[in-house]
Length: 135
Ligand SMILES: [Zn+2]
Image 1 (cartoon, protein in one colour):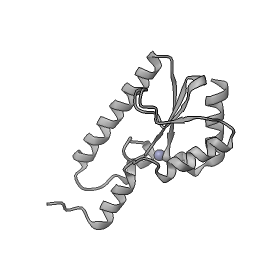
Image 2 (spheres, protein in one colour):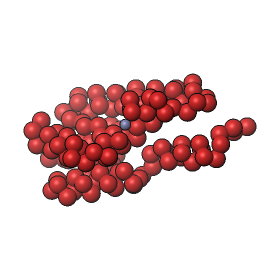
Image 3 (cartoon, rainbow, N blue to C red):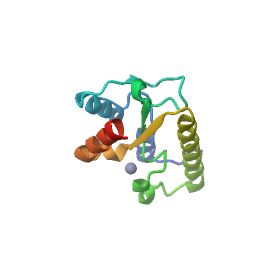
Image 4 (cartoon, rainbow, N blue to C red):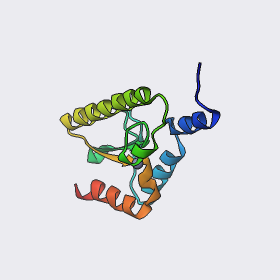
């Protein structure tokens, strides 16, 4: 039934965002080292943001590039069951938009960090600083 190769399957599994994934730990420790304090996964906020800065009314989401349809993955989409993946990704993207809108309506600002942002630490630091301090 399932024709995914072993290799493809393990690649896909690695794209599934679980709790406390490696990228998430890296992001947390970076922002912590930058001197910002935050809460994790507040369930009372739309979309359960990954990092929450209550006094600033700001949240950060870390999005896996594959599941949230980041442009960097456009060329690396699986070649099989394209419709299936696209539907999943579209669903995630519209949920993401809805969550950001809901947060905004209650006065929360949100920043999306993409998994691939973690490869460029200096740029990422600037992005986070700008979001937390200036905006
Ligand atoms: Zn990306």
